[in-house]
Length: 147
Image 1 (cartoon, helix red, strand yellow):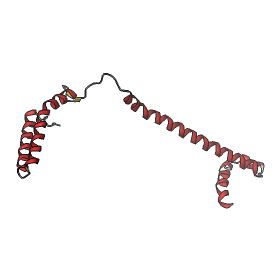
Image 2 (cartoon, rainbow, N blue to C red; image 1 turned 180 degrees about the vertical axis):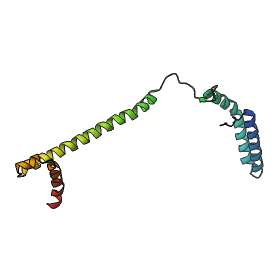
Image 3 (cartoon, rainbow, N blue to C red; image 1 turned 60 degrees about the vertical axis):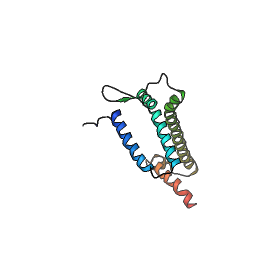
Image 4 (cartoon, helix red, strand yellow; image 1 turned 30 degrees about the vertical axis):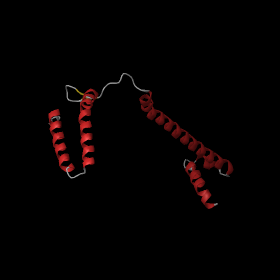
């Protein structure tokens, strides 16, 4: 796959000149004070251009393989370190919350089954029945609706 060539500064200058010519055509119908403000703004933009180009060249450089690299920092800031550690902290806290909720749910299920066993009168064969726990859970879910 071929990538388009990057624009050279000459191409950018030609584009800027064509854009300026179109702006000149449009501003002919405007009042004198507005056209003077626009002319001064253009002059300031042209004067500021070399500093901007130098800053852009310093900010990003092109490697031999065509990739762009950002400028390296001498050290990482405290905010960047905290921002990178924050998702891990949130993940650990979320897992701890899920574990405590599941533990509470399991404990309440066991307590409700134990209370049902202690309060009901059952024959001894019921304790050895494999479906007895399911029967108790069904009884516990149906009991509040019936009472």
